[in-house]
Length: 281
Ligand SMILES: [Zn+2]
Image (cartoon, rainbow, N blue to C red; front, side, top):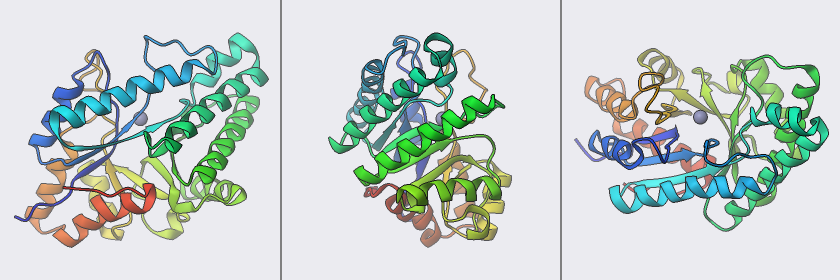
């Protein structure tokens, strides 16, 4: 078999988790590139905007360790995790909380401009029902993040409630309003909404289950694959194993459901389009 690029478009690594060892498992299974997304860490409590940078730097250091010790490609996205808004609003009131979250967006954009991150994410809105005020504030913050991404020429990675063709259109229109190209909007944890009718031009990142990827491939190749690996030692079975994307990709290549050209599109051309990055393998 020819060497193919294999990219997991959404993983988290934790300083107290398996981090480099997990990335080594990914590489051993055939994985060549990770998009590492920031999540808040227990060690840095974000109560003011300036705490975000300190927290993002942990993610950047993890990425650097993996590059150095495992030798695979790693690109990073950083941004204020949407659910943080709720705790911040309880502590500071909603309008000040919005300002803090926007400060977190500014720090993320700064790291993109410095070439340390390739996108702002995961950002968006809580995945569970929230009050109308919190939803409106979340949308305002997400729109602000999109406008900064437009200025920086980078992608956003969105965490939202479950995606539907309607919510994809709603988000596409938000991107249009600030001039961010729709292909720079990556919807993570996305069902196989692969056709333009279903995703309105946003980039779906599909959970790498057999059924979801099978359905995605039946519709085309304009999607990426992810595990949303959490690297949480307390919840080892909570999400997919970090080896899932390489294993799935290889099995599909072996069965003929995927060929090398299509694998190339999914694992290299699509991330290149969405993030503007070169995938070496
Ligand atoms: Zn995530």
